[in-house]
Length: 274
Image 1 (cartoon, rainbow, N blue to C red):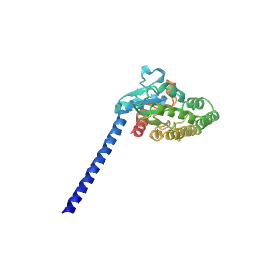
Image 2 (cartoon, one colour):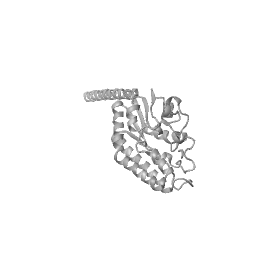
Image 3 (cartoon, one colour):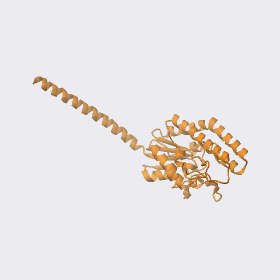
Image 4 (spheres, rainbow, N blue to C red):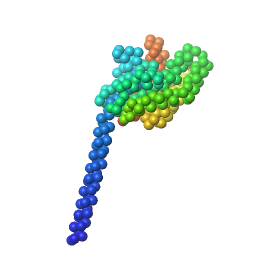
């Protein structure tokens, strides 16, 4: 009988200790969860692929930055209601522009950041202009120059952007978005660039994405690869989510349409941010 009482006492003591420890662990978890929940502001940085050039419906107040509620950052914010939403992405932005002009809203209350940048640094607008207006040999040479820049210079510039983001918003989850391949090879385009040029442009986009993904990973950031999301919706696919040359609004050329923002970028970003 005495042994039974001792056993019952020890069991009760162990059980009480377990409850105490469990309670402490739960309290710590609740505290951490509360701290994370407090940092729920969302800041959208980057270039024209983040501001929404090509999607139309631009906010007149954004001027030449051409931000639109049809861009993936605005669509995500509308669906998820972050505690604050600051949209500073701007058409034409390079890495230096992001650091100099777009980081103001970042702070301790920033819980989520998105950014796409690097294409303008590599001169992809000039690549496409060269390829559309000049010879195949000039096109391929310009692509080679862009590739060299991406391999040698761009990584350091991306590091500056990512380091600056972390310094200003140390609690934020950062999602870096890439770029789609422009062309469906063997598709329905009967005129325009040669298949060799289209393949070289796609290859340069792949290099830009892999380079960006590596730098993002080294900073502990997520990378949203949109290439798969746009598969079947490239130029020459018959159901393109990208503008080809848009002669009525040349600045929208080779940018996602509204369908590319909502059907391509938004789900990729949402998955990476979850």
